Image 1 (cartoon, helix red, strand yellow):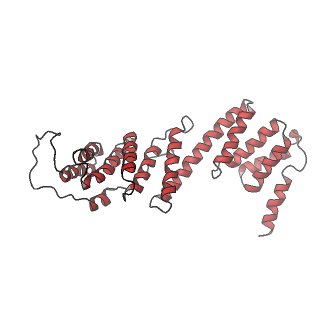
Image 2 (tube, rainbow, N blue to C red):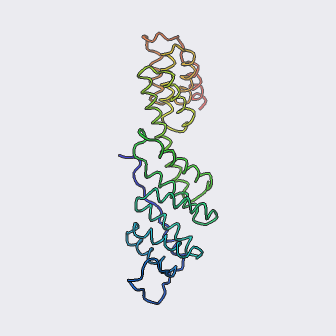
Image 3 (cartoon, rainbow, N blue to C red):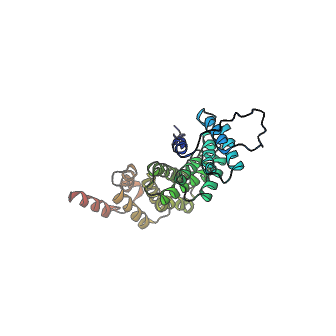
Length: 280
């Protein structure tokens, strides 16, 4: 299952409709009027809104843009900007959604919808994630956008979902580093492998990739003959992740007679963890 499946997005139509003037003019519109002829802002907006509500966001987006083009100083121009971005998002035109949202954020930093704009921009990056192991750029853009949202609006409406998606993106970036590190380690490029595993431990501390990264670091240090370094890293793993599968593998590795490791590897850490349990 693709972890980055498309997620439901809060529809800004309701708050926008509630705040916008949507009463059309009484005069009938002529179907033959050329697009370039100026039309009332509320008439254009209402037409775009009806297209969006009827499931045609691809047709609604340019209509919303037309509101701002013809009436840049009207009250509806700002609402039309965010609705155009939302319509692009719903049409899967994520690059145009991002461009529209970044423009909205720049021009309207104090608007009540700016938090939603940050959230939708992050989602627009998130929806473009295809394969993290091949290209991590979009994952990083999504992560940065979600983290930016969380910094700006720590108690915001979209914080919980943003945190979940940021954690998922972070975990996948860590997974990519692990895959590259294993690739190098299997081919004997120990220094390159170690850099990747160290990056996971340093940069992605909250992910579930860390216990394996520590285990792989121990393997690399042992391959290089650096037993003290292996003992140090292994002790960190045992102390912090006593119930992890990779910690159990680490302890089995320490007891492997073919390794001929010094007696007492990781024992100080084991005693420390046992002491913590004894005090409970």
